Image (cartoon, rainbow over all chains, first blue to last red; front, side):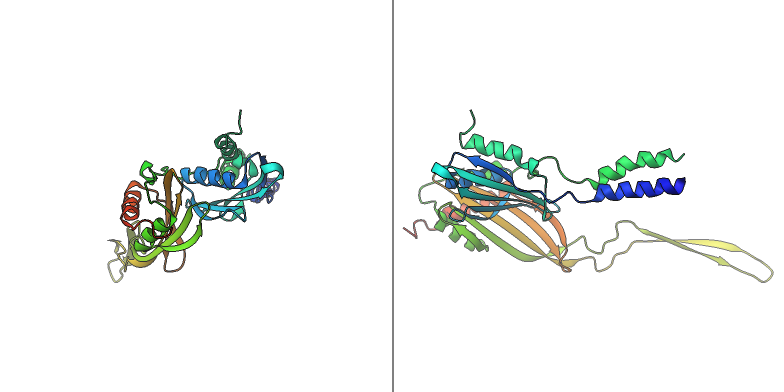
Length: 119
Length: 178
């Protein structure tokens, strides 16, 4: 009985340790030009203490890092959409592994507010 | 029953689940000194000149976004290496024979004071963004020991550094690139 319980406990323990499934990037469409989007995203991330490691306007890429153990990162991919809009893909990582995409929602809402897209 | 084991389970599971629930931010937040209004002649070239004068190596720039990303590494002394946090307590028991049988206990008390100091690499990463209105700076510092292990990693957008960098940027010759 005790052994069965211990086995169950171990199984549950290991299940708790199992890594979350690799999450897809958060996608968002914004009625703003890719350059303005990148610029605002850069300023928002820097206000949060992130160091911008790489950003390129023409490629529409932005990579930022936060030096808190074990190392956090945010990557944005911005591609131009129709009629001056842009499509943003955002992904946050912790120690090189993707974090749940819902984590980025407050940041993306702030980004929309800074671009003046929120009512 | 071993009910306490079941009580332990949520604790174990909570320990495993280390995922943060919000996007982590720097603590403390970047100092207010790390953002200042752009003066006349503040451009990317001037910032790069100042960063290089401060010993940074420029890793990446984007002229249209006004971004510079730079690194600076130097060897430093890592004081926390090999130092025992707790003193060691040891003892041995000695017995005797031959008429008298006695037992004594000797307690030893000592601290480990080995070499204690080691070389490490202190790597700083900085990003500066310049636009028409303002300059913004963020920085972090990582300490890597001689084994290549990351010992310390923190955000360091502090007032002292930003004030020094601002002074260096203002001291750099303006308008080199037209």
